[in-house]
Image 1 (cartoon, rainbow, N blue to C red):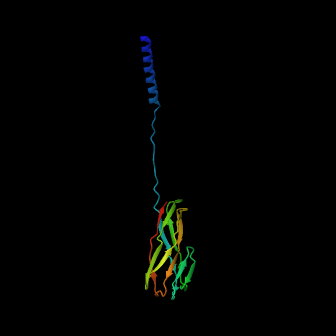
Image 2 (cartoon, rainbow, N blue to C red; image 1 turned 90 degrees about the horizontal axis):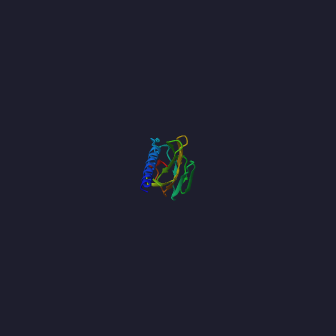
Length: 164
């Protein structure tokens, strides 16, 4: 019985060593890579300023609207006296096929000869840079006060664009 036990023990040890050696031979390694391409920063240029043209005030307040398509309308005591009106036009450039979001304030104040006037801006949401470029327009509604003082009024606002 002692001889058989020794044979089984030795045989078990040989099998364990062979199995371990087989596992060691089955192990392998590979050198893996990693890469990234950093896109050009998204940029924004104003092509045309938002303009309401010439407006006539009255004893009653009114509004002047310029749509994102550039159409002008007046309500209340405001009168359309012609002049150049236009939606604000912008060009966005960046990585082709990328989507972007637009951040724009809800209002801008126009200051000048009389009381400040508030413009409520339209809020475009974003787009896709087809071929690396896209355009969008901003419209708005100008609140003209009763008996608004004559003169030029202006203001500025900040628009930002970001990759999504």
